Length: 214
Image: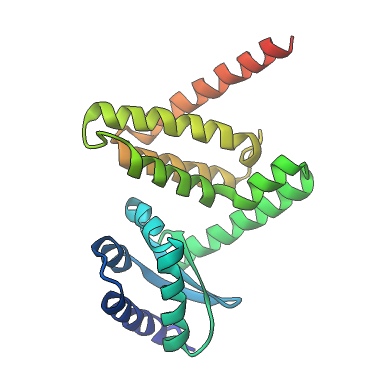
């Protein structure tokens, strides 16, 4: 299959999926996807960072089953489907680099908790934050956005215990930055401000743990 036919095939999939599933949120999520490549039996789809929260709609188990079925029919082969943040081939390369760093981290710190967290990785954190925002009360109001951001930072600082080590490599730093950008887009709080608050929260949490163990 050549690269030129990939977007055409995926566009046909989108049209069939819209016919089969009557769900406006699902339709809108599909419209923001872009077929990037097929690699190791997986169709890689991308959604730009500012719209990536829509991926959680497509990734619902009941809907994803139909996506796989339509992809198998139109592509003529069974393919897994993975949705990444970003819609360029370079974004897929960055995602693979991150996957490799997670695997290396599992080898370096193979405790049960570290392995479980690394296996789910930053994608799981992003999914958790997407659900948090979807369920946040009054998220259209300033106070609702602030409460969401506060809870999101607590989730992130917990995840960093296993996903972010001191002296983290560039893929890890970029993964963290993408998560912060996601929170920033949802909360309308600048990412740099969130990063500053995250550092303060981590320092406070470290001090609390050290005091408790003293």
